[in-house]
Length: 113
Image 1 (tube, rainbow, N blue to C red):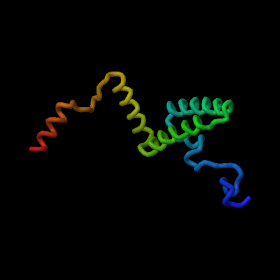
Image 2 (image 1 turned 30 degrees about the vertical axis):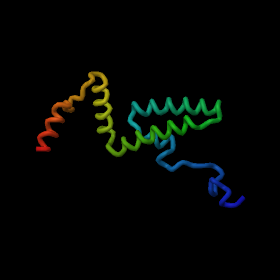
Image 3 (image 1 turned 45 degrees about the vertical axis):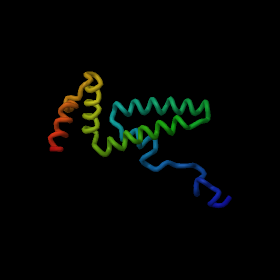
Image 4 (image 1 turned 180 degrees about the vertical axis):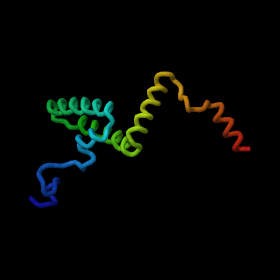
């Protein structure tokens, strides 16, 4: 077999880039999301064992890698504050830091004058 015909390079075992492995993703998440990731990943792996289809596993990894990247970029505290704010908005239906559409329109009108 030539290198061109071997999609895995020198190793017969495919590898993921370090920050996209399940362990790296799990370690980059905050506690609440870590538990959700572990459950989703285990369920996807169980399904893959039955169906021999890794689509759901890859979707879980892709989704949680995005969350892990955001968490690491903004820091765990900022990420947790964002989640708390989302929960408050979902609970109350209002963004305490938001402005009404009327205020936005007034600001636009003022700037256009």
